[in-house]
Image 1 (cartoon, rainbow, N blue to C red):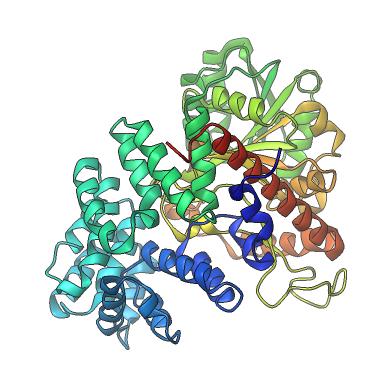
Image 2 (cartoon, rainbow, N blue to C red):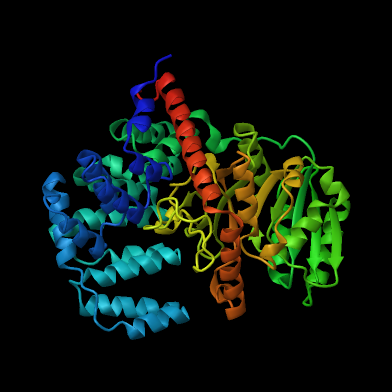
Length: 552
């Protein structure tokens, strides 16, 4: 059968744009960089992507000014959007002295931060810098009502496309989908609905109209096939993966280890107790804790009974060693699936059934992971599907490992999820290079075959990612289940204030992880993953085309 135009689109795309767009088609910074890079090779694509980049954060003065600096670009945008970009750039001014503001942000004094932003807006009503700071604060703290308050000031007519687009998002996140949809329809007139199809789909899904969500996403992809994130979400909605629940086929071992996190562990075990565990067995390792962890485990042992196996170690052996200890327990080795769970997460009741759906969709994965969000501010995503990328300026072969550099083999994982809030943009299942270790599921046979977690990366940090890299080298890439979301307490409040020794350990382990895998291996993983992602999206586009989704 001949390939459809949709399928051929990806194979015929400019290589540099393709590799980046396969990672995702969301995130203002990400899209801006892609658009700039393909201005000469594919001007039409560049214009579409740069408009989408601006729509992602339309009140950002820096982005507006950068767009203004691109010669002859603005006339290619819809006139109201071009006028809006000009107005945003003219009305956005970073104050010369931000010392006090930065100090109260560092202290996380929310009352003072809110008060200072509002007073600054009152003093400088025409300065969009403070409006943007209000939105950044509101998003980071899931205080969407405050974001709406900031956007309720008086703005000039030229600014209203940006204000309406921003207000639609914050209104939806604040729990008013009907009002959000009204605002989004107004914002879509100048921008084009394709630039908001993700948000529009989330809104109508909340209102119970799945068919309309599919129509909105399919229309966007038909007009602009480069929208990979929209395609992935569209496919899952069309085939029903968004609400599919499948029991895991076989024995399941849930593996936890903990060191001095009694309160967090108590919440984690409580969420497990409330979930649908079936016959799954919990293996709980106390890693030499000196707080009241032992009492917490005692209490939950009584609740779980024989469903929980307790292991007590006299000293903290570190994360990697604890993981290896757990995977070598005889009952764990006899299981079909092993799931590592951090001691500071909370799972939903259906979490194992969500994993079962991911296994059914991608049975040969090296590992399975999920969306991880901040416990205090759930709109903030800590981890989604992670893809290997090279930092700007590090492209090319280079030496295998250069131990004289702080980054002996420079590579990192994609950070699109840090560029926006969780509005459904990562609600899909697909392969990736790595998933977060705080909820990491394996076929036990493959876990045992991979040689365990590296003790070179003790006591913690990067041992889970390095394990995924070894799987990738065997052609067994991880799979991300974006319809499963867990809450994670890490990096919130006081927990984010790591000590100098902890930060040093993390940097040291990052160095060691890079030195463990020469440049040729990393480049090989990147190339293999790009082919895998392209095959995955082309397969999904073919299915959607054959089912008539793009013609309905």
